[in-house]
Amino acid sequence: MSLPIFLLWLVSIPFLAHSSPSQPRGTLVSCGSSTKQSIPDTSLSYIPDDGFINVGNKTTLESNDLLPILSTLRYFPQKSARKYCYTFQVIRGGKYLVRTIYFYGGFDGGKQPPVFDQIIGGTKWSVVNTTEDYANGMSSYYEIIIGAHAKTLSVCVARSNQTAANSSPFISAIEVLSLEDSMYNSTDFRTQALVAVARSAFGNEDSISFPDDPYYRLWQPFTDKNEVVSTQTIVSSSDFWNKPPEKAFSKAIAGGVGKKLEIQWPSGSLQSTRYYVSLYFQDNRAASANAWRVFSVAVNGKTFYNNLNVSTGGVTIYSAAWPLSGPTTITLTPDAKSSAGPLINAGEVYQILPFGRRTLAKDVAVMEELARNLDNPPLDWVGDPCLPQENSWTGVSCSVKDTVARIISLDLSNAGISGTLPLTVDNLSALHHLWLGGNKFSGSIPEMNSLLKLETLHLENNNFTGEIPQSLGELPSLREVLLQNNNLEGSVPEQLATKQGLKLQVSPGNHLSK
Image 1: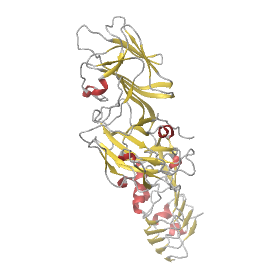
Image 2 (image 1 turned 180 degrees about the vertical axis):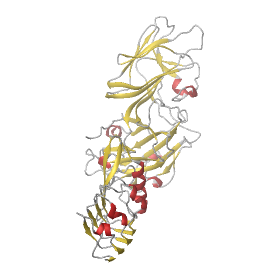
Image 3 (image 1 turned 120 degrees about the vertical axis):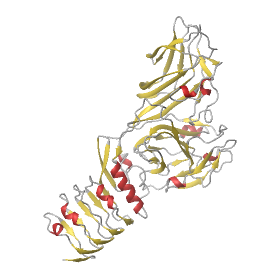
Image 4 (image 1 turned 180 degrees about the horizontal axis):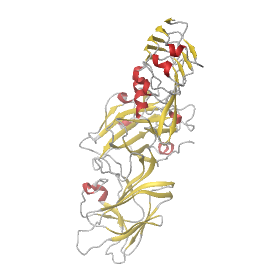
């Protein structure tokens, strides 16, 4: 069964930046750049991406009026790779906001941007389709909030059946930003991630970002036909779990005394699924003991919160998994005794993305060590080796039971690869087939005591040296061993030589005694 694709509403970044006194907490990467990119009129800087990826081509767009991070990009014409991955160092158990930024700029001579997938960890995150934004002269960005399951985090793009044959996936910038533990803490980030759909500051005509939001979240402006009011008091961001910026409370959309307030937000039609919804409110009047602003909140006609008492200190209401489908209407209905009409300052909506499937950590560790031992590993040997299954590493086949994937086959036959086999290959305990024939592997063949499911071992036509491991003769499922044309010495283990039903080929090309 194919994995569902979770679409993010494309929101646009104009080619401007907000001033800032210092860098946000995290890593800002300019893709395709060879030097650090500084944002004009700010102290923000993005580092080159060379230390995070080893595949793809760089290019510079021929335009003088682009934000620096949009003036370069990295694209991936190598069609043999199943995915193209950046790797970031993170803190296991930490919480991160990841933003990917795209601006096509006609880098390949075409008129429309390519359409492709993006993947985070072992999970397909979304389809990247920037066609509409590019036609309007805008860049596009995607955001996701995730928990780190390991010490590294991979962010990948990949071809899909929507990618034109003559086009290539590309990326302009990546931001990996650290969030505090309290933020969005009603979500179980061991099994879920939050894909940004909308984040708006109501009544504002300009977007809010860093440094007003120290977590570098972008709060898009939102106004409609309703009245806009300004606040007379300041709230403290630290009083809220999700730490919305104080500036998000500076204005609000408001309704009259005794009248309902209705807004259509987020814009557009939502996929039918569950969402994290967080709404923010603050009484814009000066504090008074006799001033009451009480109303109930409904989303698409269903009660979201009854009798919300909004003070000058501000209040948040949220749902960790609210069902939404199609257009969304938020209705604020005032209490009959309320001395003021309803209002709303800001809101966030995230689509819940199941994020529990991953490859067994022991298997991942072995494959990462193997990749380091190879002089020229396949281009896509970065990120999760197994997941998504259609984007597993070249030559790697896996089985998935429940939420855990295991490597069951490794086939790099005649791939022109050189390197050594690590001793830890013995930890691939679910492996059925290991085919490395026709390459330039050297060094010894490691013991394989734990590969009890191994059926076929093809190591022929390499440069292996040393003796044939005694453990091969003890593997109960083994039925085929090809070791010819290496530089092996010693003798064939007796249990291997006499094993019933085993196809064993050790000559020519070795130096074995009987």
